[in-house]
Every structure is written in structure tokens, then in C-alpha cells.
Length: 184
Image (cartoon, rainbow, N blue to C red; front, side, top):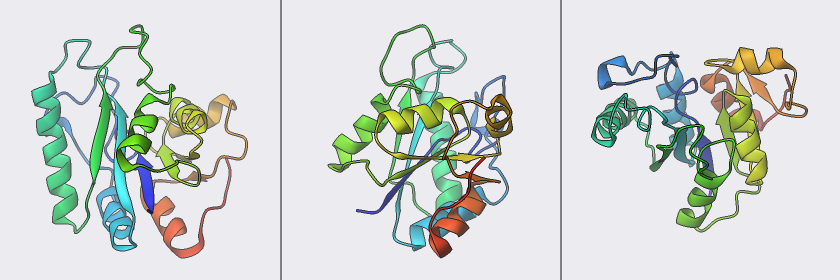
């Protein structure tokens, strides 16, 4: 099975320090939806793994998150792509769960659901916690400069050997055309 795991905020859609709380606040990063379509057409199953602590903070509920995700799925489908599944952590940073990245719980759930090892599976994120979760789950971390990516690069921590791309579109192009290369 060919699979790629994507973070949501900062990779697929614009991130916000105020959280994405409604479907109207969800705005795709230019080229990201087309990138998902290209990955889909290249035979990859695209799965999303996203922290959504806005739920535990009382900023939105699971029903609203579902409507946000339905908008994302519709927009991706409209461009010819598919997202096979969305895994999310509703917990806050202090809740002690194992599904909140940088812990690997969401990625382990993906491996269990799809009955695969994550060895050799790329996990694309925009933060150090995405990289740490991928490594902890034995997946291959990739960082994009969108979202919090530039902040992660500026920190200079934990990115040794991690391929870095300008955005999801650049990752998709490199993955489909040439395999993965690059670094921070």
C-alpha cells in the first residue's frame, strides 16, 4: 500500500494562532489541494493526522470540526483528489494523551487501521512536533516551510536529515517525479 500522511493546519490549509473554528475560516494554502489530487492520481492514499486542541479549549465542538473537514474533503474532491481518512486528537497540551503530536498515537492508529507498518511512509508536517511524531512512529518525516515551518527551521532543533520543501505542492512534485531529497 502506498500511503502518505499529511498534517492539516499549515500543510493543507492556512494556519491561525486563533485556531480554525468554522468552515468559513478554513482556507487552503495555494496549490495544496491540487497537490493532494496529484498524489491521489499517482496511486497514493492520502491520510490526514491533525491535533485539534480547539475542541478541548471549548473553541469549537466535534460537529463543527466535522463540517470543517467536510469542506476540506469537498474542496479536495472538486480538484480530483481524495483523502482516505482523517485522524484527529481533540486533547489539549496538558491532557496527557498519547494521540497528541509529538506523541505517535495518531500515526499508530493509522498503521493499525490500514494494517501497515509506517516504515517507508512519509509524514508531512510544518512543525517540530510533526517531525517528532513521525520519527516516534518509524515514519519518514518531511517538513514544509508553510504554516509554522519557518519557525521550526529557525529553531535549528531536531531537523537533521529531514527533507524540507516550500509547500505541499513542492513535496508532491518531488515525490512523484524524483523521490525525496533535500534538508533544512
